[in-house]
Length: 354
Ligand code: ATP
Ligand code: MG
Image (tube, rainbow, N blue to C red; front, side):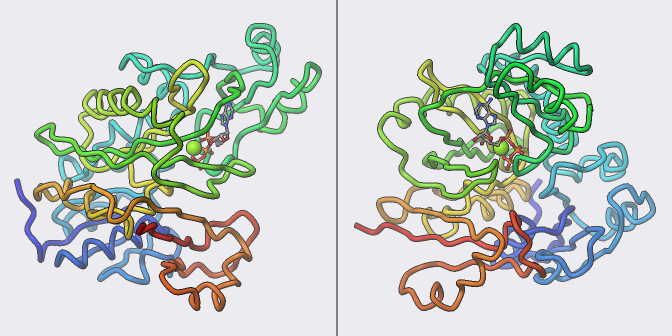
């Protein structure tokens, strides 16, 4: 059922993804109502309404439900149970969220969709970590099952003997141990899916990370990576279908010497898709709104011949005076307060027109 312009879209989570969703929604004539425990965040600054409440505040969620026509989330570390209040209004559903927020469930699910992941196993004790090192060798990465983002909740076991310090570094929490992949490059597939099963995908960006944080996305990706994109796209669409996902889903891949391996999925718009705002005919944010409101899909073609997106992390945002002076550079600043180290403060997109 189409949710027409003029309706109110609820956005749970108030960060930069919510901000860019709200801007895209406003262009199409929707109002946005943001719910977030932190006041005056990036999304609240551009939304029509804001509820300052904890994500598990059932009373606040009930009122939010009554005030919105459809709801979505821009953040995946949300408690799933309380969101059931929103029922069918929540797009994507809690199923996509529940699977994506638990690395063990996520990997099992991805494998059940016929896609490959790095060799892994669940760990819940130091003995499990040691057994994983025996099985997979080093380097190996421990990732907490829950609440990881931007490389947080992760520790590498680079040599035998590091098991204990790495296990302590992740807080001795239930985790997965994953073989370190000597990848050629990283890339992602961003897919939008509608309730009736239609899907659309963008050109895949090649992604460079530093200290677990995305630094740069480049479209189109290099030829070696491009050779793995069609297989990866098929896997991403199978995953979206199996989830019954509505809206944008991002699947991060390693281009390994042995073909594409899924790193993880995000049931939402993604940092590696920010280039689509100026670099694609329809942005990931607009397409997400189109999918959850059941409007027709927009074309995902490139505007020029490609695009490069660079994140502004921490105090890099202080370079804004020279950046805004650069002709044709699209500067995005998220309206966050303090430029703490490692914090995503904004991004830059350069569309390649030649
Ligand atoms: P985000 O939410 O920002 O995507 P995250 O905290 O969920 O990050 P991952 O995507 O799991 O973390 O890992 C962050 C980065 O660390 C990856 O993009 C990759 O560069 C590196 N990395 C993670 N797992 C592996 C692995 N098994 N082998 C090699 N590199 C890895
Ligand atoms: Mg990641």
